[in-house]
Length: 331
Ligand SMILES: Cc1cc2nc3c(=O)[nH]c(=O)nc-3n(C[C@H](O)[C@H](O)[C@H](O)COP(=O)(O)O)c2cc1C
Image (cartoon, rainbow, N blue to C red; front, side):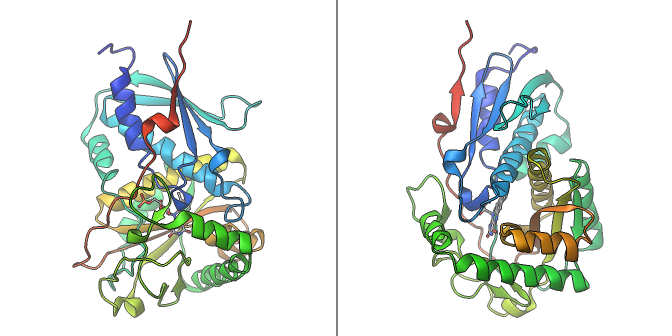
């Protein structure tokens, strides 16, 4: 290996980890271009979800999560990613240019990368054990290290957030285009390379205590214990940024990845929730009523302890690398 640059196999290994990132409806809306000394991330709008995500915010947050997964993968493989976000003002879909700097991996880098293949979006009810304040504090610090605020939402603010979720669901479910996108992207079967598999969608009610999760196509995942539908003690974190532009959303995605991987390392189950932020009216409600108007909400993350006897969740599919990566030959 040339210590000045990672070889192509190393970059491909890091990219395979990057592409394990969570994305809205598992749409994987990213494209990578590999040059001799740099790697470039682009938003792929051919994979957008115009009815679910009319602002295109989830799309950029998803790309941010992939960018952070890439950084984590490279760090474990001995390379620091030097990231230039939005490097080309004339090309807003060019989200990041990444250069490489050799750096010995440390134990925390390897531990975080090991969480990538273990992380899952878990939509089942969580146990009645609440998440200790120290762990929530650690997740908040992980988001801050990416330049993003994370607030645990409790009390009246939590009621406001849950009301916004219900309101957003009512607005979206009355839209035929939204329902068509849900049918197209969720409840997919083996052989699909994208979308949310039926095997990852719980059977039956998605009402857990005071929380109602998004309705997907019918699922096949059994709830571990129906009593938890009433006892679920999951916590809700809202990630937010000082502005609501593409750069902020990219950073929010990086923070989401950092929080989800840290939660996975701590043994927590987790689930990103974007529904209340996809409808302009409820996005504004969350900003004003939940965050006090001070910052712009970008993603809700639910964390909790899975039931002790919960079966491991299957991995969701990913597009092959050849579909998302192009090699730029230089003269
Ligand atoms: C920006 C974003 C928004 C998401 N919104 C939701 C959501 O509202 N509800 C949900 O159940 N999952 C949501 N997810 C999780 C994705 O559906 C999940 O990442 C994808 O299906 C891949 O599965 P995995 O996370 O288990 O790898 C979201 C993920 C991202 C990155």
